[in-house]
Length: 321
Length: 294
Image 1: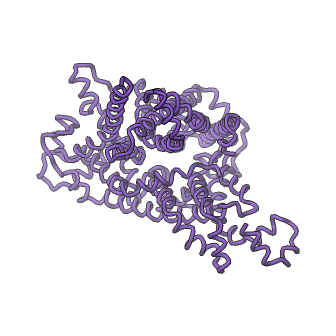
Image 2: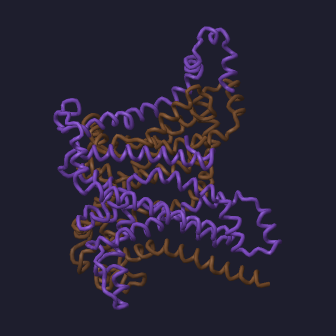
Image 3: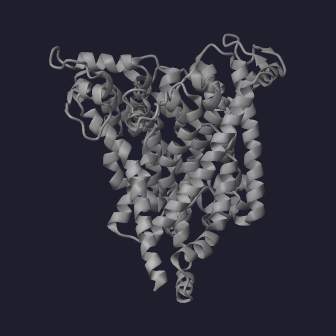
């Protein structure tokens, strides 16, 4: 609209330049100037590093640099996929994310339904505020909090267990317990915040449906299961599919804050991100770290595109692109 | 009859569930606050407890008598304030230009940003870029520059700008206002909830940042609060140093090393908890604007 008006003001120039895009670049030059800093930023910090993906195919030597290091084809990948590490870190990454998505959705949904059923009063609003709060606490802080719970002698959990005369758990050497702890802490941190989206969707449901159901003698439970949940189905499916695209993504902050470089626990806690992060800080091969990153990026990209395709099939409007 | 009775029971169950989960969310905070005010010896003997036998503020004295935490505080505040400001400038200018589908190239430019969310060059590339080419290591800017723009936030803001009636822009244009003036005088003042929401997201990201310190910073004067937290979680030596140096000799039998860790956590989350009630009403409204699509 705006550009057409502006174009009308300068008819001579408009006729001179035939190319539609070029004309727009001149017409709206100030708007393009406004977006330029962000574009330059992305070129430097997001597109330039793509050149570095070449390192994945090199015997990278930091002194010789990207353009001087020896090209070794797929050797880095061969080395990575020959060992068992790739199975462990891929398995852990995918499993954590899947568990987070499923449990997170269920909990956020339950909280959203319970809070809307309770209506709006000061007490309910306060409870909601408290539930959202953990979302704003960084993982390092959660990691420090968790020490109070998991330490061998003074930790809350072990003191509780020993007061009931059960045996204690040595959390920082016991690999089995961590997947459960991750899931529980993820719920603790994200469920309250995740409920906001579902609450907004519930508000959008036509109130007359509940009214009609009530007149027909439906109980509250029936209203929840026959009206609220079916009406939320598309929102749930959508969010679920879109988050599926991220199951190759990292949980570096979480895992590293909670367990750090604890080699006792790698079997169940090491993920793709922590693996790359560790090899970056220790004297690992940069070429191989980069090969792992590339593997993560490519599979992750394919998953996002697939998830988006699926989402489009379910509901035309919900796809991102 | 039976139905309403059931509904009432259900209400009680819902209240118990909601209250229970809220308490679970609150409990760790309470435990750490109270433990940070607990006497070191009591903590070591009786463990973490909501009702300690003996209180003490030795940990907080130690923190503020030594320079490590106060310096890290200044670093973190600088990063959060300057970073959030610069991020909001970069985000809102781009979001404004792409809003309302005024540009012929709006869609390709949006895709250009969207792609950066999907595909990354990996940590090794970023590391080489930052250390070999930009030479940001051991400067405070390494916390800020690489994370100036989060495309997701940019799209969120663009969607918010899309809702502003186009007539407002046109009227201002006829009056002779330039794009920058329209953005700063009309669009931004109308978008305070969006600015607050997205500013909060950026501020929290900067406040929580520790990986740059771990990868790029050797100078202890430039450590961020969260990095210090990361260090003292597993390395009691650092807390021990603060505790020993911060408490005058002979005033306490044991240096409050464990409580110093908890007190550090408390001074780190403190600002968030204090600002939280003021910001909360904004972001619940701002979030309804929706996701990337638009």
